[in-house]
Amino acid sequence: MAASKWEWDDDVYAIHGYRPGEVEPTTELIMRHKHEHDRERVEETLAQARADGAPFNIYYRILVGDSVRRVVLVGEGEYDDEARIGGPVDRLVGYYLDLTPEMEAESSAAANAAVAASAKARDTIEQAKGILMLGYGLDPDAAFAMLKWWSRNRNVKVREVADRLIQVARDGHVSHPGLRRLLDSLLDDLTAHRVP
Image (tube, rainbow, N blue to C red; front, side, top):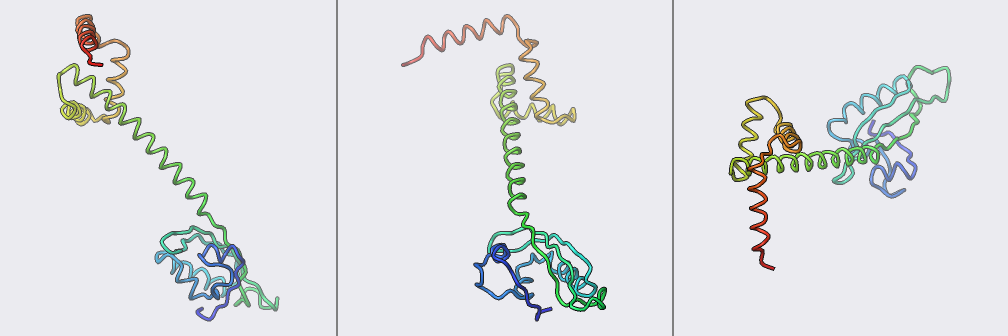
């Protein structure tokens, strides 16, 4: 296998992190670029294809410096003498599909969605903490501890407890005329004595 000679087009050089013609593609060079967990599987697939010429495709990772490219290698054996079809091949031919850009885009989209969901959950929890701080006179840590206590003891996610509390507050179910008067008075006092 180490003596195997490869021919690459410009795109395959680029996939492996080289300029066209910068290196001579050999099986040894190619295997050095394979992710260690993929090497044996790639070697077995290529050995089987060389032995019987059957079409193959294999997904694996290529190491290029500090980055990883994800590719599918598709190929089959070719024979100079058709009488030998089904036996050892004269050469393997095929092509690479570089899946890296698509996979990176999917990963980026998933990460962005997770960050957005986390920010929304954080906002919801902060609003619920504010409700508990007002209602019980708690500091932020104690309000969060209360949310966690209800979450743990009712087996409901903290965000869900927070969502429900906010919905009840929005619907006016926890509002009381005395509380509204107190808040009006407090807001009036705070804004009347504001220093410009």
